[in-house]
Image 1 (cartoon, rainbow, N blue to C red):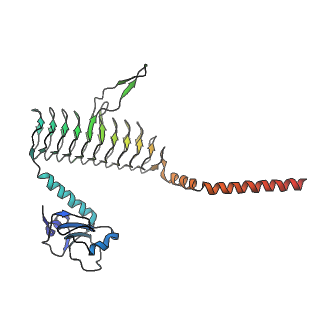
Image 2 (tube, helix red, strand yellow; image 1 turned 30 degrees about the horizontal axis):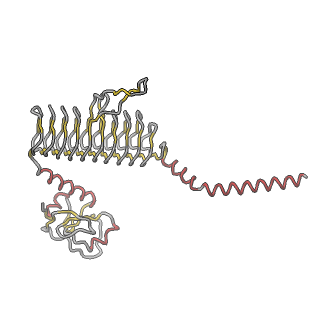
Image 3 (cartoon, rainbow, N blue to C red; image 1 turned 90 degrees about the horizontal axis):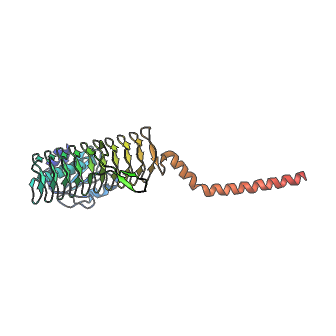
Length: 352
């Protein structure tokens, strides 16, 4: 696909400096880009590459003052990074919109309802009473169990598995290998030391504008629903247990885990490899540092915690600073002990 600088400027409401008719067909880093590619400059430390790059079109910030002439066509925007992200999104949308139709072999139940402008790749399975909205793209090996409902503008990448009765909202992206609606980890201990499985009869609800990374697992509720609310973003390799609720616009980094029935508020940030125990609440705006272990509820909004067990971030930094000073403090204590012994010896002499 080729785009002129004029077309690009129109998409992002930018101002052109240079040849508006020049075309690009791909993207590149400003330090590596070649002719026919579009790059951007947002970080001032990369400005030197602006004057040597071979990129044909470059997005720059409105307030950037040039130190020398540039051979590329420039498009000025308020925020070059944001504008570049917008263009990447548009490019991806155009590429995926071109995919339509149903490849073979695949299985589609006779009771399934399919929307308009959809794409179903080979080796996909569509179960009974499944509802698929408009502009949905299902890549190879996608599995949709019975009674699954998909909204509009959804992309399910290869190998995504969505178990029966789960509901996916609009404008959702789920990456390869992710499993939605597998059984929650529910087992009742018996007197003989064995465990009896507790049936998991709930479902998973994923609301609008959610993105889920590759190989993430979201368990169905024991009863009711596990819920991922609108705008949440989940990284790769995350475990979300049964009956968990993830709040609006919450972000979770890779290898984190949230135990059963825990509720995360809105705009929470959960770092990589962090773990949260079950049946607690995490307040809106909380920030949980990577590899932290949260063992009790965070009740105050906009709290930042770190460590295991996790506690106040500022207090943790003070503790770490104190630990680093322990050798120095030990030396001072030893010196004080010697001084005390010396004073005691002098006192004994005086009293004698």
